[in-house]
Image (cartoon, rainbow, N blue to C red):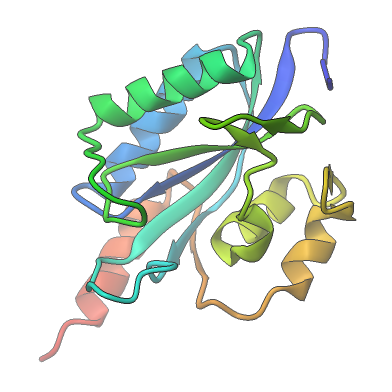
Length: 185
């Protein structure tokens, strides 16, 4: 287990495609910080919904944060679910639109295979919206089970339409400009 003296380093994916997406990301960052400490925050990326073929969904905003926590992995998962629920997350089926989605991508160097929690996140290495922001903050980190660095994985992925929209502080203006520019005249 990777412990930096203040707890275990965990990488958490954050996404939102419903409501005020930026506010949901900001709320998630504040809440995760309360769980022990925030070490780094990636840029924000806009992406098409991934793994959805039978329904139309709004674009996602995605990012990754590095947190330091003394919580056990299942306790961290419970806290992340509470944060999602506080932001209006409703769970009906997999890959549905959501106000907020928080995923434990990595928890130290642990491999966890439980019914309710699998770490490393089982599909993270297939998703550009996870690997690109993770590569921004931890390019040399080796992903257990895959045994490749984050940057190697990110570089090997096919283009899935990811677009950097800025830092969390500057993203509101960029998303608004992009949204206005894409409206039909």
